[in-house]
Amino acid sequence: MRKTVSVGIIASKIFLIRGKRVMLDKDLAILYNVQTSQLTRQVRRNIERFPSDFMFRLSREEFENLICHFGISSWGGTRKMAYAFTEQGVAMLSGVLRSKRAIQVNVQIMRTFVQLRRMLLTNEGLRRKIEEMERKYNKKFIIVFEAIKQLLEPPKLEEKKIIGFKV
Image (cartoon, rainbow, N blue to C red):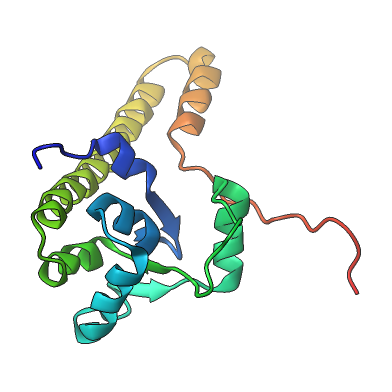
């Protein structure tokens, strides 16, 4: 039971959907070492603990977008759209799933969310320092500063191009 899940694995399971950082029910079930149906059953039994800002169900379009962009397998897919849990929803899961594994994984997930927040704040501080340097130094470095700013920008979601014919 001492094996903990690495921050890198957890961070790779956090997606940005509807402007919120979330984890999907199937990924959480794998981390907790339970079946997805067991996890969702416990959530449904305790639905009052999961308001819409803690958990929401993906739309078909959002789910298909994840399949296309992140390579989630559609083979053997799901019959119901996945639940997405925000950081608060994941924290609430600790009260619903009571196994030792669930508690350990939950602690690690909370640490990962905190670490991601710190990284975002660090990038903002770095951006301010670069802007200060830009004002201070010669305009000859403007190309360098622009390149650094582009690297610090969060990736922009592009609209999916439709290929084929519309009927």
